[in-house]
Picture (cartoon, rainbow, N blue to C red):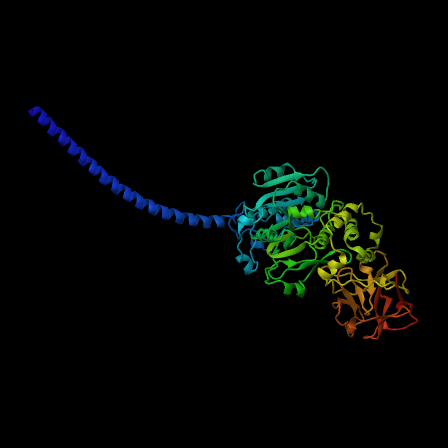
Length: 580
């Protein structure tokens, strides 16, 4: 009995001790759970805060390029786009001259400049402040065709694209080697780009020319947008986003960057910080730059809105891949390069697209001292453009390019069918709606062409414009060549002697001068100043009423033939002229 009672007390004691332990454990657990919940709540808030910061950081990361540029090195030649002027000894100067002779670019200086040099972003403040929704922008394939390009200019172009293009937007950089024969562009180039992300190299099996080489690159592209660049460019940060943003708004917009100049000799980068120039052409179908007309300024709501341009320079532009294919890509009947830019410009506008320059996109371009290689098919290409797109206005082109009438330009039936299928507008529509500023020549019968001297019948009036400006030179005499160009003039119903092979220039005589200069003609509808008013008389004399003198051919004291204004004399054959 005592044993049983003792056992019960022992059992009861153990039970109480167990309950005590369980109670203590419960209290501890409750405290722990409370602490964990508080900690979890704080952690959750911190996590949400962290995610918010991460989202902002992620948005900022989307603008990051494929590769980051090295830090700015102000001691590096050409850094921030500054000119490079080196003191060279005789041996170095010889190497420099040889590089210019070989490439039409001072490659000796280019080789001294970093492949990763920084270009100062001097774009308009509104451009630098623009933001983009990177997730909604289309991707792009950048296509660069090249032929025997210099090593440093090609690689600097490649690195510039990779170091200024957001990685999320740049699908690939496609290099198309158009059958180069320089040794360094073979295995050495392949080895170099094998270490670069998103760069592809395609080689042609024969010389294709720029047009077909670019199309080969486009065939292999996978981006939504095709962005064509030349092989000696440098991109300003923020160059790509405006182009893609505009195409995302309007898929039928073909958009060009502002083309800034990189000096071929010093590699100084000259940025157009204000309103850029737009493209035009003359009646020889040569591309020309022009100021933005007032009507376009009034149409735009802000100075960073895209600017409509009648034509493109051709080397640098972005276009939706789908729209490019719908539009008929390039005219593959064109050879090498030259003229394809105007053909594509006419087609874009006449087939209801738009051609624009975005003032917030800037790309520098090295304009060589001369064409680095010949373009023997330029005339053939322009004839194809004229025959397909210019309708009855093509006669003005042929008048100024007599050899073009005999040029063989191949089969254009497919291009004409393309125009019919796309139901494109007439060239008359283009002139009235896209380029009304362009003066359409009268080209009246017997009042246009070369103006030959009767007194010195081997000679014709000739105007050789200065290299950097269409005005500033004087009318002269030169052997008649029958090629149009600098010997093509038009006598208008307003009494002007127009020279519009380059731009609209009018012959003028200033007070007290006997020389005949050139000035810009007045716009259509504007009054004609007396200084540029002439009377081409039935006798063949060209009379200038304001000076009361006539154009006269003569021999200088040195025996050179020239022309000047003299007192009119109907018996002087040197004052008799006729068009031919």
